[in-house]
Length: 106
Length: 219
Image (cartoon, rainbow over all chains, first blue to last red; front, side, top):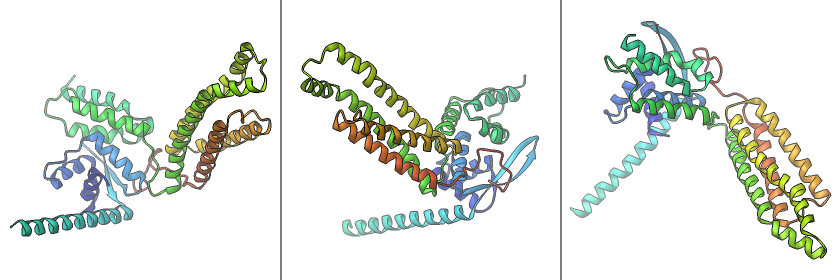
């Protein structure tokens, strides 16, 4: 799973959000490292919708502008959890190796 | 015109990079996101934004919209692109084996003239090469359309397979396809790839979300 997709799914894990809120939330989650642009966001959202991981939740009009909220599907929640598990296992392996290396060199 | 209105007009123009179905479904919210993210007093999109919109629009036009979980559809697309490659290889094989064909013909008929060979190339080999080049385009076009969830592409692809099968069978039947072994091998390989693709096309799921009007909660 690409990092942008992972971060978008993470942003939606706590509840539905509209496009701009996803962009700001992804920046917060990644500590400012990933700043999605609108074109990138909508391309990723389209891919996630096609894959059945995200769906449209609701729409509202704010300041005469359409806001569309997106939410995770059950499949999306499952895939996010699986990907998070995979990343955690990789990180744990990396930390274990680093600790071993530190112990050997120290 | 205010800076805001001018910026909106320019963003709207950039959204023409996106396909019609996408604009109908997402233009209003997309514009909202772009305008909320704009700087105070900004009158035109920044170069990076333009590039992002261009790349995003092109990816929407070209990219497959098949769900990764639909293995039959994913495999069908791969096989169709493989078919285009094999078809291209077939055309190249025909071109490369012309010398072999001429030598074999001369060996069988020492009186074979240059004029006869020219007529053979014009009426026999050139149509094969042109037809092959058209077929490469057809493979790519049908793969693209099938990847966009177009049902007609599946029907046309099955008809294309039937046509190819008849063509190969006729060619083998009247010996016109066996003028060089390499061409026959390429033709059979192509047919097998197409057969596998047809099986996958028939088995793939029928819907691709988001290419029509989508209601909230029904994506």
